[in-house]
Length: 178
Ligand SMILES: O=P(O)(O)OC[C@H]1O[C@H](OP(=O)(O)OP(=O)(O)O)[C@H](O)[C@@H]1O
Ligand code: HPA
Image 1 (cartoon, rainbow, N blue to C red):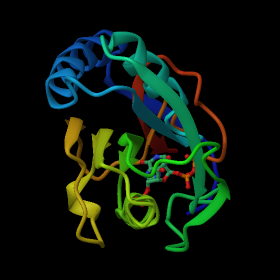
Image 2 (cartoon, rainbow, N blue to C red):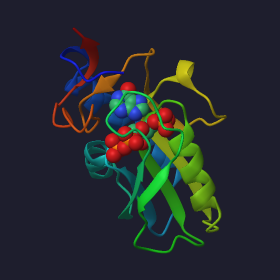
Image 3 (cartoon, protein in one colour):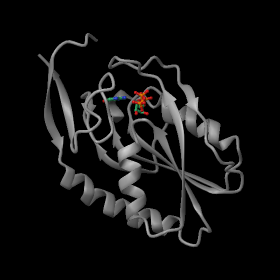
């Protein structure tokens, strides 16, 4: 799609996001209670805001690591080719791991990352996505926890970009091309 002018209509407020993260954190604490040190893996770049808020809400011993995966370029359509631009710093064999994704759209990114990290034999691998667009799915994948299910709209804000812009919006907005 072209990168013409667009406006952003608010979809999910910062307050709604914060309230939902509190609920999700309690569920994650229950799932990982007793873990010695959970490795929370943020998928860059889109999850950098979500992971920052989520880990501060978790009352668990955590380690934070990052994996950079990219497939969108500057457009609104997936290339369907997931490139790993930066790997984890630490080993995850035998560890409890939570992958933090900002949005699951076609599902190619999460599917690829789950396959990659599963091959490293973690003790437990779980996934969380702030946003889920199930109507766009092209692969059979679903995150274990989802913040909000959204319709087929291109969204930005709270870490999520359109052509690298708008990641710094505190809320989630939908892009309306004008
Ligand atoms: O389910 P999918 O269709 O694979 O889309 C989801 C992925 O697309 C975006 O990443 P992008 O490739 O734009 O990289 P970014 O996180 O650096 O913005 C987003 O952050 C997700 O990781
Ligand atoms: O709706 C979206 N917005 C931004 N990046 C994305 N990557 C997949 N879906 C989206």
